[in-house]
Every structure is written in structure tokens, then in C-alpha cells.
Image (tube, rainbow, N blue to C red; front, side, top):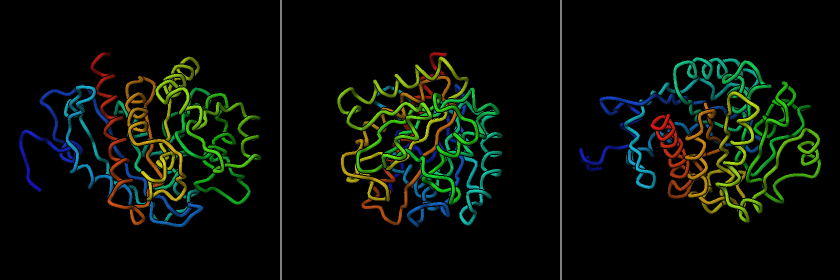
Length: 305
């Protein structure tokens, strides 16, 4: 692949190529957990796949006139979690996120399955009551905890840990991808539920910005979980849980950018991608675009701060 000094690559940005003066920093952490997945697969390969696909992207967001080289990127590598149960992965991932968030303006966690969300939230805050959670996901992730931790119950586990349901907004939930029992758990907990049909009618930007605005009035920090299976299955063949009728990649990019611009969004995760099931890298491309759009939002945030 030809290199062009006038077309700097996003992979070089992640490797440390920045402008002489930067506005702030972003840290990226690989969390290749997979043993808690309801559908067995190789989500542990996603961090490497996403890093590799960044070579196909530039550093410039034309739509928002943002150059990522104004943001110092620190790739912290992958934690050794591919063969760890979620119970055993909790402390190492929590501590790694906590350390990364001490110095970075934002932290990106590359999963791995959705089990990374619980330790990610704990790593971001010492007070769950003062933390907000937004999920972009086709599913509630509220499955029962009686059989242990899995990628199907990180939100349920966080409720059990003490995260108030009123601090949670779930966006992109789909029909026939959830159960009535878990919908009732969400209602009883006070979780704000924004379905895919609502997003289609009202617009994703309105849903995401509304969630950020509401949560920012009651919390100090916000964590955003980007489960890539929120995408339509046509755009996410590498996500076992993706269904027809989900979001489009441009909607996910827009959501990521908006989250990046908000000063209280301090950490996100990108999860549920199994590269061995991908077709023409379409899912990995969408995940990489989501990562870069979030980073572009962070640049925009810092530029106007």
C-alpha cells in the first residue's frame, strides 16, 4: 500500500504520529475477553483487527473539519484476558481503565465481548451513583445473574453493584432480540429505553444528545458502551447478535462523534466483533470508523473548551 506524506494514516496517529502541539490525549486499551460470550467465538481477535484496519483510514474528518493529529493517542496494548473468565478479568481491566483515565481526556476500550462494560464502568468511577451509562445495543444485557457473568448481563451486574437504573439510557433496542421479562427488569429499575423504531422516527442525534443532556445534569462522568451488534446485520456480519433492521454505520459514526464532543463522556467501549465471521471487513471497518469518529469528537470538545 502506497504511503503519501500528504495523506497521514490513522494507524500512524494511533502509533504516536501527532501535530507539534496537541490539545489533549486519548488512551486505547485492548480487552480481548471472550469466555463469557453466550455465542462462542473469537471476539478476542477484534483489538488487533481494528488496529490493522486503521491503516485504511486517514486522520482527517472532512465532515467536521477535524484533524486527529491534534489529539495525542496512546495505545496501551492488550491485557492478557483472552483465556480469563469475566470474574477473573474484572480487577485487571478495572485497574487498567482507572490508570488510563487518570491522565487521558478519554479512554477507548477495544473488546472483546460485552463483558468488558462492567469493569470499564468501575474503572471510570469510584462512585456508581455519580456515573451515567449509555448503551448503543440491540439488547438489554439484563439477563439473570444466577448462572454467572456473561456478555448478556453486564448491565444487570452493574445494577446489582449499585448503579442506579435512572443513570442508564439504552438506545437502539430491537424487537425480537429481547424478552418481556428483561423489558420488565428495565422498567422496574427505571432505565430509559430508546428503541430502534423511536430512533428511526425521531433521529439518532436527538436520542443521543437527549441522553447526554439528561445524564449530565445528574452525574459527574458518563461511560458509553458501543455494542456493534446495534448495527443492521447487513453491516455487521461479524456480530453474532446483530439483527436485520438495526442502525446504519453513518448513524453509529454520528453517535460516536456526539459522545466525543461531550465533556462528561470519559470512556467508551467497542465490543462484540468476531473478525473470523466478517465479510470483506465490513464490521471491522464500521468499528474503526466509530473509534475515529469518537476521537474526532474529543478533538472538537477540546478545541472549544
